[in-house]
Image (tube, rainbow, N blue to C red; front, top):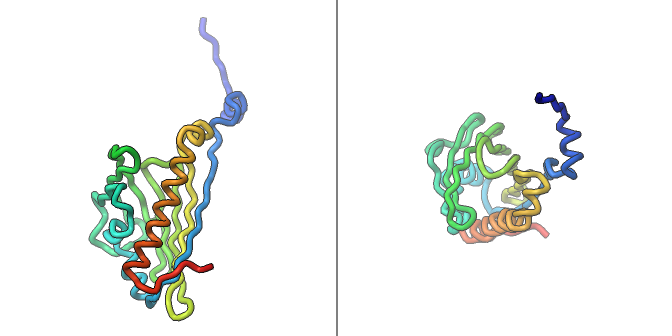
Length: 178
């Protein structure tokens, strides 16, 4: 006869040595752009421009949700090839948007267990200080961290480094604050 085994998620996580615990990562970047707030917002609030500032090796492709300026509730789906040219679908939602100030995209389906990305814009020193604050977690808890954490973190940081370099070419005079 079969018996019942009732175990809470906390008890299970304890038995597995914390393997299910989600480890949150944070990446913050800033870049000053020699633009008016209107020009900066005009560039960053168009989803198609994301392709211009994403590394070519990711084969970034917007599948739906482009053609309009960013707005709260907007769903954008992409196809990316982040590792070994393997295609992966990614769906994000713009959950908050205040024109000329900030917008937040959150993953709905995709490679991360958690993805929350704040894009903030502030007039400063005759230009705009653009700030990205990204919180993300890998799937698989500690096991996911052990398997691919170092590679994923390097890739994420590399994407933002590429963006800084690309934006410096698109907008000469852009600089990263010291």
